[in-house]
Amino acid sequence: MRRFRWSRDTALPYILLLGGIIGVLVSVILTAEQINILKNPSAVLSCDINPIISCGSVITKPQASALGIPNTMFGIVGFSIVATIGASLLAGARFKRWFWLCTQGGVTFGILAVTWLQYQSIFILGTLCPFCLITWTIMIPMFLYTTLYTIREGYLKTPKKWQSVVEALQRNHLAILILWYMLIVGLITQRFWDYWSTLL
Image (cartoon, rainbow, N blue to C red; front, side):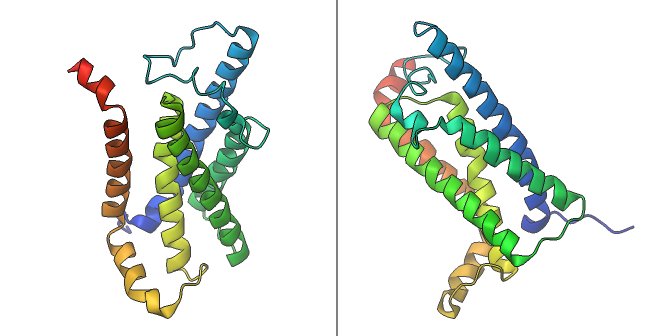
């Protein structure tokens, strides 16, 4: 019996499937909350926890519909596609280079959108949507491990002079993921320290 070996590549289908499912659920919940607050602007939403952690203060802002359509609609569609790709990989599907490049384009768009929303939430709006935090958390590994896979398989070409950097990224993928999370936690801690300190 062949022993299962957990690695960054064997983890990718699970990351895409579970991340996609969580992303769809979060997007659906946020859509429902957005509809609720449109019907009743004075409503207190289930995700309004305190002055800092509150989705009601975010989903009513222009940033929640950056392209004229609620961001949650993109989330429902995008995460559904990602979950389907993950399930297909677990079922043994193999995709051609063009498909992986499209997937890479999708997760790159997703991480850029998440990074922009992080900046808007932390530094402009001064409010953290708890469901958005979940989206940030799942989007990072989906982008990171998809990128590492497409590079390793040669779908995403990189200059030879970057070879040593690419190899270092492949070896230290877990450290990169942890540092990425730590950076976000550090920014949130620093930005809202005045509030956090009152809870100590």
